[in-house]
Length: 242
Image (tube, rainbow, N blue to C red; front, side, top):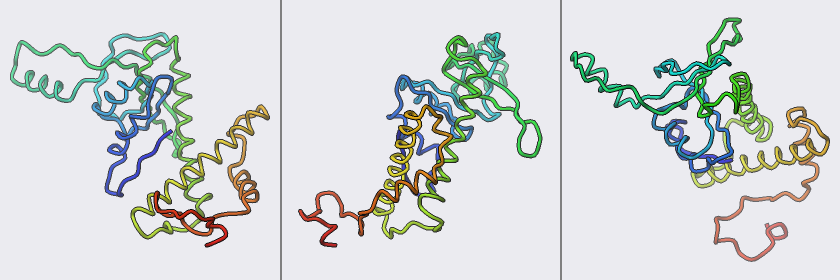
């Protein structure tokens, strides 16, 4: 749906804030536990998209109302409010602020990791009503997030090749090369999805590498050089005049 690029010193959470403009109603945005912050969640929820994020052990999630499917309603507290309440308790104040915040629904479940040990997953979502999506359905939806990791492998290892670095030698051209890789991957996956729909199959059952080889065989007239910046391209056929 969208992507953001920056220098390697920029954190993923900082980059994620630039993606919120692409969120909207009808979308389910899934994120792992490295992305949660109160500010980012608040901004993403305001977009109208449904959110399903894994959180670390840090946020305090009190039980407001338990649901039959094992999930429960809770709320996210602004860190500034939490700090004031802690100060009030420390001073013994009788006028401690009543807890309030952004309402969320919490889904907790245990999975067995690669070491054979149990690991607790804690998800929060803007979908409060279990009638819209049960805890089991949301847990299954979060599991699909791992397909993104497979996509990264497809882009970096199979599509680009095993080279350790990008070919471009300037920041502008590096950005262009990365966007080219992302757009090409999107186009390949889009064609795979169309083929799977026509055959009545799950797109996950199709081989990315086989699809990539088929497409490469069909593209017989590939560009021999990088395109010039926008607005500087002369009116001629570069394929005939390299």
